[in-house]
Each structure stands twice: as C-alpha cells, then as structure tokens.
Image 1 (cartoon, rainbow, N blue to C red):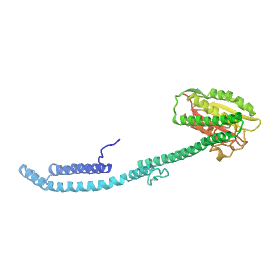
Image 2 (cartoon, one colour; image 1 turned 180 degrees about the vertical axis):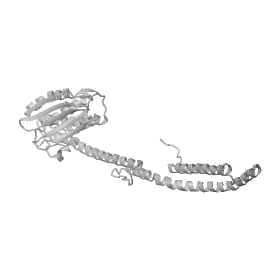
Image 3 (spheres, rainbow, N blue to C red; image 1 turned 90 degrees about the horizontal axis):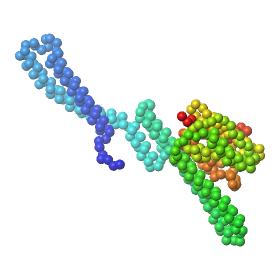
Length: 358
C-alpha cells in the first residue's frame, strides 16, 4: 500500500519537544510578569495610582524585549536539543529497522542483540531476535524437507524408469507389473503423506469433540492384523480423554503412533502399550513399545521428516519416513505437545498431550 511520505518521527518529536518548551517558557515568563506587576511586596512599587500605572508601563516595555530574546533562545535550544534527544531515543528503532532490511535480503542468521537496560526497545529487539531464531530454524527445516522430499520422490520414479527399460528385454510381464505396482503404491503413499502434513500445518480443519481413547481403540483394531503378522501384542487401557479437534487427523495421529510402534519393534514377542489419561487441563495419549535401544540424540530427531530409527528396509509396511513428523504436525495444529523418550530396555515412549475439551 503506497502512501504519501510525511514528516519523520524524529522531526515530529523535535517539533513536539520545541513546542512544549516554548509553551512552558511563555507560561513561566507570563507568571514572572504578573508577579512583578501585581504581587510585589509593598515599597517595591509606589501605591500612588498615577505612578503605579506609569511604573507598570515602563516595566512592561523593558520586560517584553527581554522576554522575546528568551523565547528565541528557547526556540533554538528546543529545536537543537529536541533533534539530538529524539535521535538518541530513536537510535534503537533505527537499528531494528536496519536489521529488518537485512533479514528481508535473506540473511536470517542476523541478530540485533541490542545492548543496554531492559526497556521497551530492548524488549522489542529481543522479541525480534527470538522471532528470527524461529524463522531461521523453520526455513532450514523447510529446505531439508524439500531436499528429502525430492530425494524420496525421485527414488520410485527412478525405479519405474529402470523397470520400464528392463521390460524391453524378455522379462515376465506379471513380475514387472507387480514391481511397478509396489513402486507406484509407495509414491502414492508418500504424496498422500505430504498432503496430510501440509493440511495439518495449515490447520485446515473444523474442530469437533473427540475422545482420544476411542481413537486409540479404533487404530488398534485397524492395525491388529499387522501386529499379529509381526508377533506384536497390543494392549489398550486408560480413561476417557475428551479433547477438541479434527477426528480424522487425530485418528491419523493415533494410527501413525501405533504403526510406528508395531513396525519398529522386536522381531518376536514384541508389545505395544497404549494408555489414555485425563487431567484437569490436558488429556494424554501414551504409546510405549519394545524394540531396539535408541540413543537420546537419535530420539530427538525422529519427529523430523524422513528420519527413521533404523536402517531403511524395503517392505510393504515400513512407511515413507513421515509417521512421527505427521504426528508432531497434528499435535502442533491442536495446540498440544509431543514427547519422544527412549526406553532403557529398548524401544520408545511417545506421549501426546492435548488441551482438555471444555
């Protein structure tokens, strides 16, 4: 939105300071004049009526030129002093403006780091630095995400091209179609996961009452066949956990958590414990699974897109590397918190806390 350029803030402050000083000077000089004319003690001016008015006229003619000189001095002093004072007061704002222009050129690592005491400008600068830190981290995350997504999408396309090239040789059509179907399914799953992640980040949903305990039971029933196939036992316990949000997204959240707990579990006799609790301010969903030991550093990165706790395995149920990333995004979209903690005996404990429904 283009606007006509007006007076600068510094000039406005300067004129304000000078004007206030002039008004104060006028009031002071007027008070002195009134005091001389009307409130001097007896004997300073004769009480004779004729001489009183003559003395007052002489005093006024002598005082007015002096008052004019004083007002000129106050005007010059007010303008110069106000200009310097306004510049000193607005120096932090100028520094913040320069930092904003630097960031607008793409230098997200720049920080203001305003020195001095904790005043309003310092609070503004610190808040701006904190915002820049989050923005820098978000931009870096988006760049990593774009690079990883490009790599993940390129893999099935490259495989499809290779298979089509090999198909020119005498290869069994059924085998070729089966492999192409697997690759195509993986590409579709990845695309749908990326769309779901984008939908959760944008909060493009209508909030409704949701019971997390029911969503956990529904997800457990859906993945029961996969758990039995892998020899994993699912145990679901807990209380009702009423919250508000998107039923489909919260179901996806619980499904991703259980799928991740089943796939990344022990090869035999693994277990998954799903519990829900309701607290005065929050509801809690906890998914705990057995499995390989995971370091604390690795656990802290599992919610990033395309991060896996184990080496990539080609199977129908390994996922596309976005399971916990989608969980984290859905949790943020519902104003909740996600905690991923490695178990001492192996496996993970993942806890989702959401606001309780009022």
